[in-house]
Length: 133
Figure (cartoon, rainbow, N blue to C red):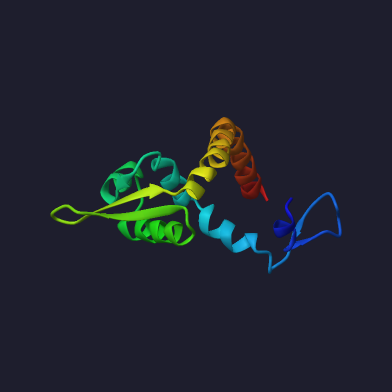
């Protein structure tokens, strides 16, 4: 872990970080690691217009997609480009910083797909146990 990352980590137990409330990673993770941000970044393997992104993300509302794109743009993951078309068009693409997250996020996605059955099984066992109590 880098010195910057260590700034918000309590090292009482050298093997496991305990993230303090003022840890600088916490708000960033909150803003970039939600489900819609992950999916938007996955869809942006190439520049896309807003409606194209929306069509590829079944279930996302226009409001949520707008908020997600603005948050990703604010955090330097996405760039918004106004196109000189009539009517005016807007295109979104990943920045170099956004591209640098694609690989770790793809590992998370692959892990999720590989373990989805096991997770659903655990959820069902837990839910049944709750009904029995």
